[in-house]
Length: 358
Image (cartoon, rainbow, N blue to C red):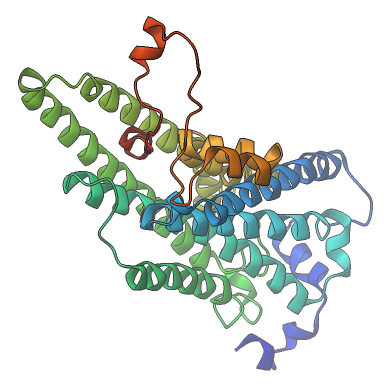
């Protein structure tokens, strides 16, 4: 246990471990310190605001009270926590690191580990939920609220464990020969394990979404000669676009950081991991900003709810929604035109297309 440790190194300041591992630490501000803080602050603000918007939309709109949206809300909460954690990191990095105690340094690291792990596991949970729903040809998952709550609790338990493992002993405070350079108080074995776990989650998501795409494409080809619904091809295209965005965002945001951690954990002395590690951290944090855009802004009903929140929410919700949360489209009076007759109904439930496009 770290906080009960009696080894000699435990009484040293944080700068002692930085000097031992060769990571520069100075009370003077350098160019990359200004860049990290300058980029980090606005990113954190956008992350917090975007995910708050998602959470509020899910809470106030009854038609979002289904398992997929509970998972999206939990993912938004994880990404919101990521924004807050990274905001804390921004104000405890660079020259400010020297003033941290060992306990404060581990708390800073635990917050980042928990938030980023929760975000990744949430992405995996959404992928599994979409797989189950599409393969049973349902609009909403049959998962009960109790099971959804258990899944959400499990996600956060995994995140908490991954955040506290280094604090509770898997570190190099009493074994300086195992310290890494990117995080000088973490052991190399922990960095390698953390990177491999996240890469494993990535490959699982690739497999899940690939399986979904192959299934939907085959089913579309089989059903298209026997159905008059023109939405089949559009569903496949929308799903393919969403898959590409999800996987592309994950690869772009996470791969550089995971590679840096692996190289550092494998003691690659010629890889210059310190030159890029802060920028990779900022890029990885951007995934928490991209998530609400991919999973929520592609849903037409979610976008409509955002507009109501941002533009006179209560008044517009009373005007356009009935007690069940179904939208009432205004009916124009006067001579009906061909355009109005084509846009048939005045009472129209939310389209299944929006959920399938997730």
